[in-house]
Image (cartoon, rainbow, N blue to C red; front, side):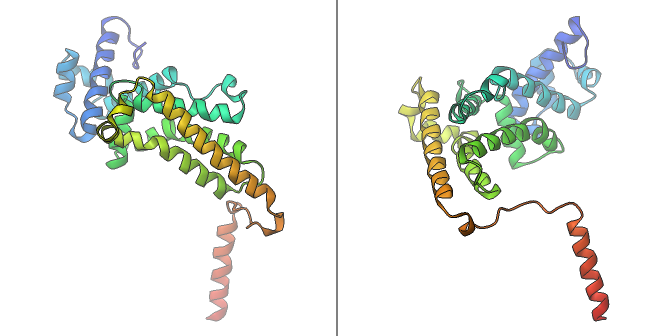
Length: 250
């Protein structure tokens, strides 16, 4: 069913517009993307964009939602079956999902390319992408990393290991063409995704095992305190205390 719920020819037109918009916005981003090129590619007219989506911004938001749904369906990164696996296997599965999105076809997925545009030149829809696409992925990866590092890992330990692990595939969001130019033999290997999954998972898991061993070998009293978010109202109380102290000085 198309995003506006219409069936028949209306629904087919809306879907063609979404597919054409995904291609156009992936190539040029929101600002430089041309509605005229989208409607021409979709075999529609300018009025159809307003009719189905309320304009360019509405079409962009609907395209993001459409691509996010498709990515979740094609490459799901979370499920009860995945969570039942050992954390090492969960990480391998997660790495595979991300690499398939960036390298799993002859071209990067439209959603990945649109995300790259948004990171370089954010639009008001950036929050939609962050909430609907990026935050759930980061939260899932953080949980996997936390399980691998063990209970003695601080929030900073988890954050650093998460960033280090993710950086190994985030490179391909922007650097796919460089990868293909500098390492053509590897880039054209039909098993490139499998090889990268093995490499990233192996190196990341080895690093986290070493970190866990170090943390568990250290006496609890020798470790720096675990960083925690301030309790609700703490900042307000601090501000009040500072104000009272200032009044006393006056």
